[in-house]
Amino acid sequence: MAEWTLETAGRLYAGWGHWESLSQEGDTWYGLDFGYGGKDRTACIKIVWIEGVYYVEEMFSEAKLSIRRTLTKMREARIPFNAKIFADSAMPLLIDEIRRGGYTTVRKATKGNVEAGIKKIQDKDIVIIGDDKSYLYFGYMTFSRDKNGKLPHEPDELAAMRYGINSKTPIKNAQRNKPVKARKRKGFL
Image (cartoon, rainbow, N blue to C red):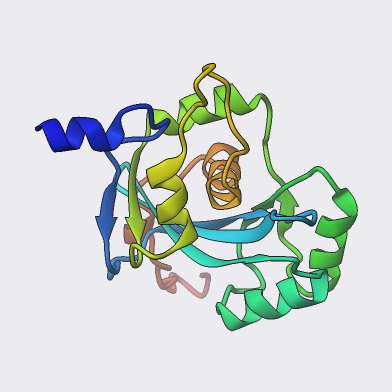
């Protein structure tokens, strides 16, 4: 018990699960945060919602990505062109470039106040998918207030996740929604 307390002391996020992989399907969408230079990273996070739990997986996270390279990374990560993507809206031109690159359903994320957005995330059941070497996992493990109680720079992976989770209302029972065959009745479908 003491180890757990020391591990989470001061962290903004605690109590998340960690799985190596996810085999189920559910309501799926993505969060995207653009890096603007320096140490900032462009991060894309996949979010799968199943029965009240958000399963989040880092698709990519890299510093100094151009829009062209971001699009290449999205294709390499096999993100569908029709995927729901909620992107950082600080520079609308970047969202337009992503749309021109084929991802026509990308839209501005609901950002609002960072403190309020973090509070919403704290109230969610979240499981990180992937290895413990990802930037998403590292950010989760280290994101805490400074000694004066102020928020530090939010890790870009956590920002992308926050954009995605706070921008979309999940579809309940998404894994059970399958197309139903139309039946013919008296010549009509």
